[in-house]
Image (cartoon, rainbow, N blue to C red; front, side, top):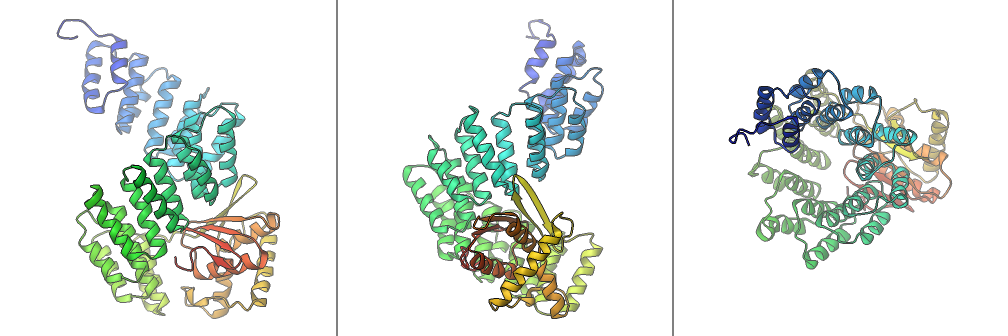
Length: 510
């Protein structure tokens, strides 16, 4: 066009910038300045968008700030930029300043919260969107279902599912897969399977979601059976498929099967194992007690080593009381600047379990000097579409008095059934009575007590815990499921536990 002396106009630049990568866009930006169109509203909006999409937040903001008038499109482009790169507070300031809001800007903000670990804020904003009479669309429900899955908000997720079916959004493969993921993460595997069966023209992503769902709940044989079925039908497994399959092996202690699947990735399916697959194998081997094999696997990895991977191995050392290997791994992580708060906490726990309180004090001093803080245990439970969160020893809840009265009642039930608190897991140098008090107010016990007083007798209780559930809480929950005749479903950091009539689906292997 230029070579034939045809001069571009504002429409030329706004059209070509819409789908342009950032590097050629910089050249086009120069051309727009040369021809005097860079200040045109549509061109400037497209430039803000292209820099935002390319991750150059500073340039996007500079252009945005220099705009004499800002359209809803340019404001949404800047909000999208902030939300995409985790600058949620900056995005919210712009969002709150909008005079008018369409579905696109609501979606961007809700998804920003969901993608950056703030699902409760996303769900709150979704309710505000409904109150503002803005009609959700497919993009909205995908973001909201993700937020529901993160918080375990099953009731809200079911409401969204009903909204999808009654408002013409339609359950295509994308929406169906999101529903499977949401139901699996919210503890309702039965609903996940029903959605899976109803999806026509399933793709490999839908199959993966169901395999991962079964694995997450510890139904390992169902996961492996589904994997075999998808391969027989002709679907090519992906790297995500094998994360589900290897996790299924990990939850059931299927070491030889795990090795077989791990090697088949490259040999049979041409998939190069990633750090996540090595993590699954380290978890499988470590929990089964094959610590040296797990250690050798990590050392021989051909890809960049990951602190999470080492953390998994360190967790296995804690589980099996291997102080020597735990110290060796922790020292390596510190020397390589790979240590995080989890490294220090796990090493401290290894020492504490062995009664080495000097080691505990030394590690906690190191942790303080390094500026790390221990992640607090937090448990949540959804009741009447509202998520209630509890920390250990929490007194903030409006029903704290009733919760602690229920805890006293629970302690009476446990004593009647001959239960003795497992004080050996309290990793502080305290007297036994103090240890019992510490165990009694763990966050999952507070959430469980709240569930017992606020829900109808006989209904299932679903709890989400951000860390691994402790042995004492696990044993107590088993006994309470038997005493009350209730099903209790708990999602911890690693997996789901289904407690029914005094037994857990994990078979006490977690």
